[in-house]
Amino acid sequence: MPDWLALYYRDPLELTHGEGRHVWDAEGRRYLDFFGGILTTMTAHALPEVTKAVSEQASRIIHSSTLYLNRPMVDLAERIATLSGIPDARVFFTTSGTEANDAALLLATTYRRSNQILALRNSYHGRSFSTIGVTGNSAWSPTSLSPLQTLYVHGGIRTRGPYAQLSDAQFIEACVADLQDMLAQTQRGSVAALIAEPVQGVGGFTLPPDGLFAAFREVLQEHGILWISDEVQTGWGRTGEHFWGWQAHARNGPPDLLTFAKGIGNGMAIGGVVARAEVMNCLDANSISTFGGSPVTMAAGLANLSYLIEHDLQGNSRRVGGLLIERLRAVAAGLPVVREVRGRGLMIGIELVDPDGAPSAHAATLALEYAREEGVLIGKGGREGNALRIAPPMSLSVAEAEEGAALLEAALTRVQSEVAAEWQT
Image (cartoon, rainbow, N blue to C red):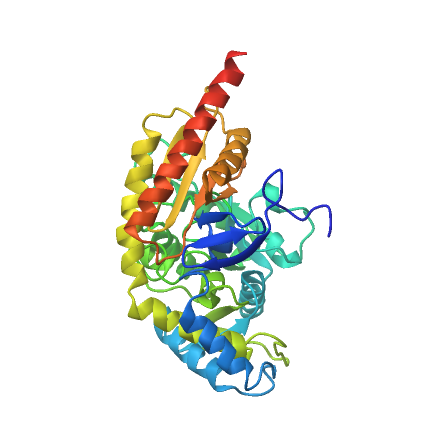
């Protein structure tokens, strides 16, 4: 394994199996899973409907590539095209969110005949050469080399930065002015697309005020610039209020392209891009995907999507996620180490700081370790590495939300005591 492969915990954790919202390690200890394999185990571990679909499909044919049709791929493409909200939609399947965003960038730059891309500061869009080039988070961008010319605009972080003290309306106005100023400096205005996460995932679950991207879209449309909504983490109802993150910014219609991955496969490797036919069909060379659209992964995606919709997991994310956010805010009220609890649905960020208010990656690392010791697994992110990321499977029960909040309260109380003691000495 390479030295740069990220592993959580001082003593790395080996997970052996899972069920529902719980996982077990190699020593047999059970944990409440509040991160779901980086938002990938979307419905539940070992969901019978998904494992049955995978097993039955694997017993028939496992692989064929996109050179041949398979019914699960066509069925899933039709369902996603309809759900996307994009008119005359076409769907291309990949194996990951990175590859989906890579495909979207290929389509946008080809369609617009430009390699200029707008992205948000603090963003993350994948680990390929091109997606690193549009990632605005230096902790996940190991090289400045890129085939793209990327221009970074404001808007992803509401409560930090030069516009933090503005009202929501003023914040949107300032970000739009920044976008207009940036476009005035581009080569004849020939920008291909804006790529943006409705909620920044790796960035620490930060999000702009509702309507920001609708305001951006007015400006983009004046220049013919495409809008790519990166829904790899926000899609499928995780935010509770909407099925897609872009729907919080829907005043001026849907995006031109939408990328998805992670949760749709419930652990199987599925990604993809949805685009208007005019954009999707702009490529004039042959292309395939060897593993995108695999019969087994498509069967998993169909079963998982059906379960999610039939059991209203979007509604559950709204209800249980709202309860969990309020419970965590109540916990944070008595802990100065917590600067902010933010998020939407079952996509919750907790930002940790030192006593002087500076972002504290050290406190976040302690919280990760102590949460594990208490029996709950969470994630970490943020531009300064000081944000905790909480994203349980969307079938989380009220009792499990209460249990997880209590475990996190115990972990954060330990962090508060240790950080305070360190500053006193």
